[in-house]
Length: 124
Image 1 (spheres, rainbow, N blue to C red):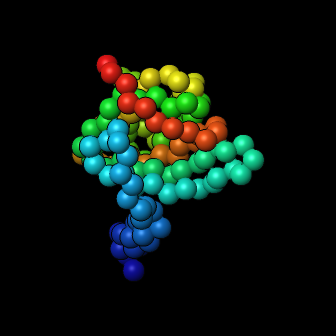
Image 2: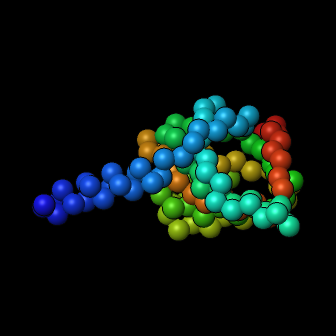
């Protein structure tokens, strides 16, 4: 097997592992990929692996608890800044924010909610 064939096979295996169930959230114009990674029964903290599809349109929104995003793949627009793999974004509880994918590719990230959360759309 050539190096190129090995890389293609690796990408196929990795993409199967990253198949995420579709989730319909009120602040997005299309479904996102969402997989729970960790749910803490004591604190209510919730950690998710999230994939935004290309061309996602998102409303400004806020959550009732602080949360953190770590970008793994692709690029995201976060409150007017473009961030890529390895970026770390933290949002205090109740802070209005906007985040979405920025290119013709998906963006993949981990989001960590520091307690049980809700989502509320906010006006610009």
